[in-house]
Image 1 (cartoon, helix red, strand yellow):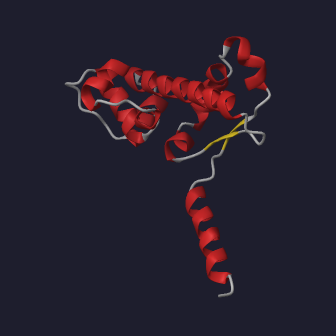
Image 2 (cartoon, rainbow, N blue to C red; image 1 turned 90 degrees about the vertical axis):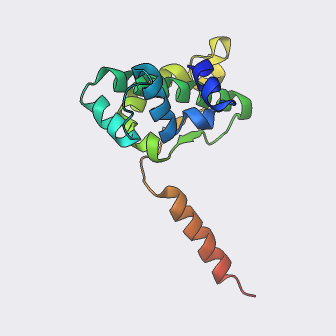
Length: 144
């Protein structure tokens, strides 16, 4: 899949794959480029209904997310843990709770280190906006 994405976009980043557009790209890749590619929400809905290509996409997404989060845990050793949030992650929560940890912990001899760092799924929608509002209120409330 990486070479297919590289042919299409040039540079392939985790941000490209772990996004709504990434779901669509995976669907196009796994289902064949001649196929009509649905929206991210439709892909999730199709996966919930058991559609084979959509399920493959969701499982691939969760695998990449787990691997990437495990890499971040090893690189930064965040004491408070890794927090998974965002629109796509919230919509895939049932698959994330099932398969994420297998890929998160798959670090060979470094597994014990990653196992000490919790990974938490945040299902609260609009968290980023709420944080921005809180910061804005703090700036507005500060005396001049």
